[in-house]
Length: 215
Image 1 (cartoon, rainbow, N blue to C red):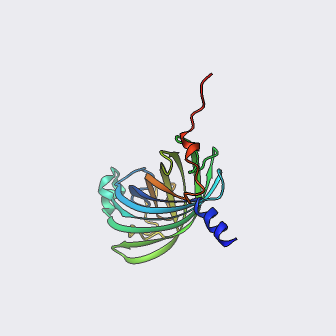
Image 2: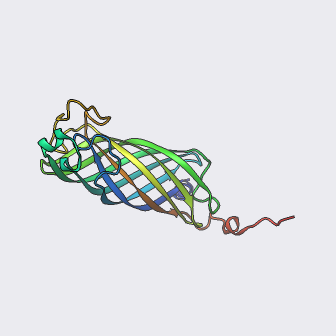
Image 3: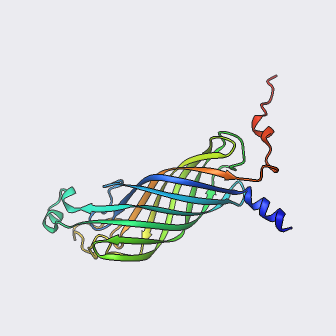
């Protein structure tokens, strides 16, 4: 029974790598998307419960920065604040596929999806080291490239409960209230490639190679 359970679970697991960009949203940058992007890299492990639902653990590392001089308004030019930071992001998320999708399915099988969960972020900034709870959520697209390979793109946001990443605590232009005013946020966007782990004895190459005859 144990061998059967382990073998069955193994066929539902994907491991992969991620590359993309991080950017910051907060008191310096209230709403501009893809502002001052920094390169980020990471890895992920996904357990596919069924063609609609998956659970994914992931770790990303990247940079975050902001500078008042990048914005044309009098308040920020007078404040003249800036910061640079690094973030290590570890999350556990639940994925829902809008279309039935399985990494052991046919080539070019694809689906869009949404994801959400919980995680922690470890920040290294001018204010020192700290770790904070984050709420991750996002949208993405994934597609099977080959019998064992799949790829996709994702754009995700991280809501933090921390307002000193940029060194400013609720210090915004009183004439402007942005969507991300109360706490600092950051976003992760990029591409990923995953590899299917499976038991070769349970995989069926004929499923991939079979092409129905045209009548």
